Image 1 (cartoon, rainbow, N blue to C red):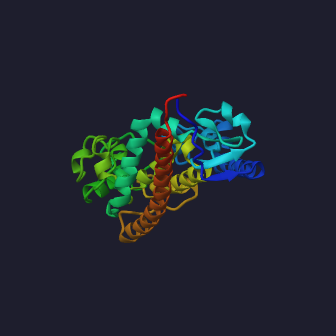
Image 2 (image 1 turned 180 degrees about the vertical axis):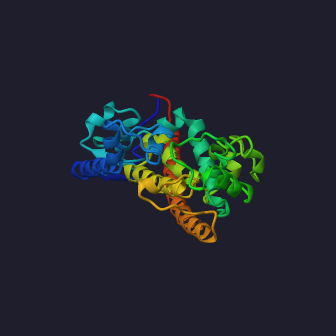
Image 3 (image 1 turned 45 degrees about the vertical axis):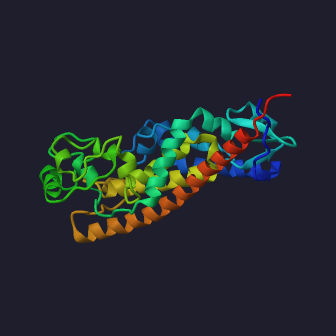
Length: 304
């Protein structure tokens, strides 16, 4: 039998955690308000919808608040009915990080390896967002119902005149057949941990996905911070794409020009720094969960 380990490092009184939960709900609702309003009207949006269709997580998932590993809630008996929560000493409730790690060992290990790899790998800033261009290269049909800013011939000329250096498999896999050989790298799912780096807009958007997958281990603030950054990056990704986004109220980042390249790299560096800060926080979440798991495992003893 495993003895309970009173491992949480901080206790949140009822008034405090309830205020945090309410603030989280309000922030999540604000972040998803426009999407929810459009969805209620049956309208689609080629830029914003990506965060709910490609990643397949509904706004309700973002609204779900967790205190995160290391925090215990007072007067929260109802939380014992939630999955991955347990009672700790003196009538408190906390995330059962040990049980989560035990049940999802491969997933947590994968996220941890990728997070560590990107944190320690130098970021690269020479792709200029050409992945989106390579996804429409020499094809009449494309993924979004938006006209091409430079037309078909102009778009193909941009791709043909540039060295493409996409390192992210989940972007590369959408390249057209004729664009694939033009990429300096040939990323696969198996090489993701060896290639992903913090200069990549898509790798940085994926932080939102990893926070979701780590579920109750991740405090609500970190989850929403990752989503907010992903949404900001998504708009930049489309501004730098071959699509004419003028109808969406934003200017194009003309990466085919020196000025456009400079603007893209400026934003890319900013996103890189901010995403690395989020990765540091995510890494600490995993480390804290491992410490709790080890403490619980170390407290195991035969029943009397």
